[in-house]
Image (cartoon, rainbow, N blue to C red; front, side, top):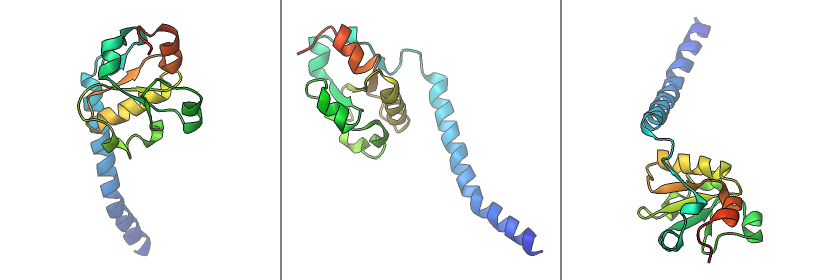
Length: 138
């Protein structure tokens, strides 16, 4: 009887964790059902002087990489810190996340969008792509 009671207690305590997991999975699926292929991205070629002036750039690389070079005016928030520092991002206007190639910043963008920030975009091809093909560089 003790083993059975222990199992029931464990199942009861674990139920909220599974409920939260199911709610998260449902939210992710809901987002993905309506996201288009182009939603949430911007190409370096689309960043002209007007877009550059209107956007807030967030460099999602680590501080050492940021110190080696970044887009002028960018703020450095490492990609894995985005959920904890979401309140530092503007709630309106275009916010562009970038890393070296776009891989880590894509994860940061996805997390921010799941947390309700629809104004965030990932710079496809990242800082390297921006250096090579941006329509405008100050």
